[in-house]
Image 1 (spheres, rainbow, N blue to C red):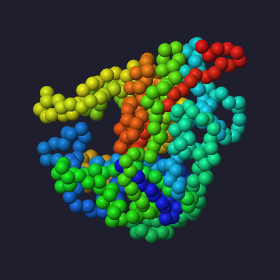
Image 2: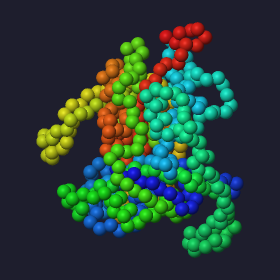
Image 3: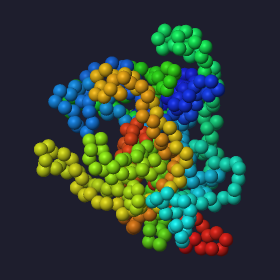
Image 4: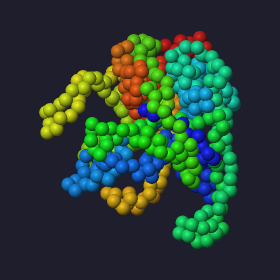
Length: 461
C-alpha cells in the first residue's frame, strides 16, 4: 500500500452534519473521518480522466440484470487513516479508552462480579468496567499515542510514557473561527435569492506546521480489463498531480506518496494472553471508527434474517450469548462444485470465544452528501442529496473477550487484528466494520487484559 502524507495549504473544513445557522457554529474542526480522505481520493481519480480504467457493473451482490452497464470506476480503491504524522515520521494513533492517566497501564478494568444480575449491563456483557483510579475532575490522558507507546501498551510492557509519546489535540491542530456569507445556489452570488441576509459562523481546522495527515491507500486496477496487466492508480494520480481537494469548501493539500512494504500501524498480540480460571483474556482496541447497523428480521427481498441490534455491538457477535460468529479460515483451494470455480478455505472452524465486556465512548456521526447521478438505479441516487446517517463506535473503544483455550485465543486474534495472523504484513487483512471497511473503518489490534484488582480486602474471585 502507498503511504500518503497530506499537508494542508490552508485551513480545512470537515463538517459533521450539524446546523450552520444563527448561533450554531459549523463543527468543522474535528479530526477527519476515514470516509473523508477516501472520498477525496475517489473524486481526484475521477477528475484525472485516466484512460484504460476497468469499469464495473452497477448493482448489489452480482444481481446486475441483462443489460447492466459497465460504468462504475475505481472500485478497487481502499484506504486507511488519516492519522497524525510528525515531520520526523512518527505516526500517532487514538488513545485506548481504558487509559485514563499519563501512563500506559489501563485504569479501567472489568470487574469479576459474583452476582451478574446486579447493575444494568446490556446483553451480552457479563462484567462491568470499573475505574482503579481515585475520582478526579481532570484527566491527564492525552488524545494520541505514538506507535511505539501503543505497541508497549498492547504488550503490557513498560508502563511509563516517554517524552514525545503522547499528544493532545491542541498539540497537533488548532481551531479557527470565521464568519461567512451564504451563497445562493441558483445565482452563485451573496445577498440575493434564498441567501438574502444570511450569514453563518464556522470552525476550521488548522494543522500545525510540523504535522501531516498520514493515509494508507491503494487502487490496483486491470489495464483495459486485462488481469495480467495491473497498475496502482494512486501512483498514476500522484505522479501527475501533487495537490488534492480534501473536505469541504474546496480546500487543498499537497501530497507526498511512497510505496512501503509494510503499513505503518501497530501490531496486535498473537499469543501470550493472560489466563483466568481456564479462560484466556483477549481485548480488541479500535484504531479507527466502526459502523455496525441494526439488522431487522426481514431482508429487503423478504427473506428471514436473524435480527441484531448493532450500534455498540459488533454484528459478528451473537446479541444474546456474546459468542463470536467469525470463522477461522486458512488455506485456499478451488471449488468446482458449482457452475463457476471459486476460491474457498481449506479449513473453516468456529472460534470458541465470547464477548464479556465493552468500553465504548460516545458515538460519532457519519454522514455525507451525494451528487446527482442520472444513470443510477434508484431514485435516491439519481436525485442525489444527503447520504444515510450512521452512528459509529469511535476509535479507542475496547472490547473484552474470553477464549476457551490458548489456541482459540490465537484464532480470535488472527480474526480481529488488522494484519491477521501475519507478523510482517504487506497489506491490511481484516476490516471488521460491517459498513465502509474499504474506506478505513473497523481497523483494530489485540492485546490482553486482567480483571479489576482486589478491593477493600475482598477477593474479586
